[in-house]
Image 1 (tube, rainbow, N blue to C red):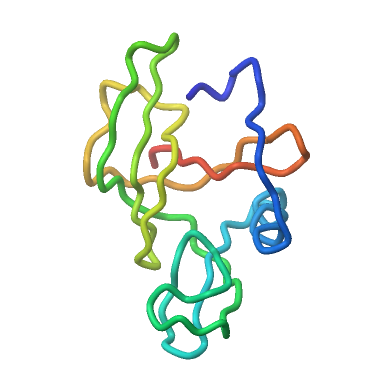
Image 2 (image 1 turned 45 degrees about the vertical axis):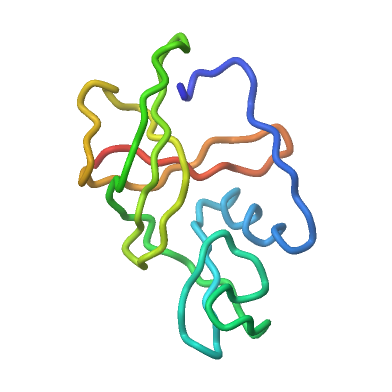
Length: 130
């Protein structure tokens, strides 16, 4: 996906996800950490998927990661990259790799979070090569 896209992405924001999107709008990548089992998870839902506790809280992630897997959509003009990025905290995110040469993207490549503005004034986390 190009950062010069014509239409800004539209998000569905609810009470459970609002702090996540507000953090992204402020340049923070937030994930959830469970206070019962001490594990982190993404997507940041209230219920821990590991132990099913509802004692979870948002923490700020480093924003650093590596590409675990990716696909280049060449039918689009311009082509764009969809990828699973594993961030330093250990969770994987489905995201876009932006501001890159799609021919040079590779598994294991280091990336850093950046944010793409959305229609509602929030921001969408995407990643750029380091």
